[in-house]
Length: 120
Image (cartoon, rainbow, N blue to C red; front, side, top):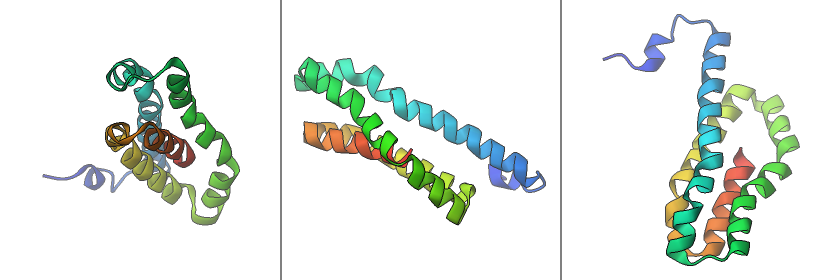
């Protein structure tokens, strides 16, 4: 059975890049709002206060705001294709481990959310 990459072999590079951007955007927005949906259940299970919930919801943006210029520099140096692939892999990794971080501690979950913001 051919993979999706085999099907894209004859497609122009610009279309493949746009397809990768579409997939990255879909994953990116899913990673951004997943905690907003799950915060109610997480707060009930781990007895987080409203202030702690606020820190959890804003932790992503602290990481996100700090690395905009650095991401642009990486894209200039290594190319957007490679940087985008690495970013998708890293923020998917951190999103996958978000439940494990929640079980560890509030601080681990905060760090995980900041790291998701950093790589996005």
